[in-house]
Length: 119
Image (cartoon, rainbow, N blue to C red; front, side):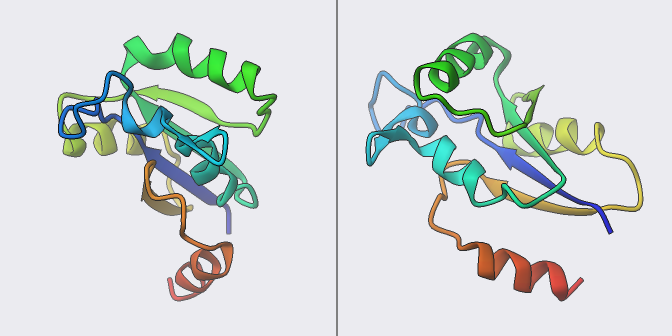
């Protein structure tokens, strides 16, 4: 069965008092969101939900970091619920969907696969 990762990364970094949203902060010299997406690289489709105003910045980060993992950008909503809903609306029926927070890069592929196997 087709597996789709829905990675929600709509934060603005307000609680961290950072001028950069936390999904774009560096971890081992790469934006956190890149690390997260890599954990789902074995899925057939990856959808990343971001605020529309961050699309150009994200595309620049991908280019600057030579990151070419195939993924689709979807515009987020005013809150987490709406962002997930926006992403789900773009996914066909009859697939396995893994919804994951874009700033949680430490999940392992092995755990992801175990969770998928339980569905």
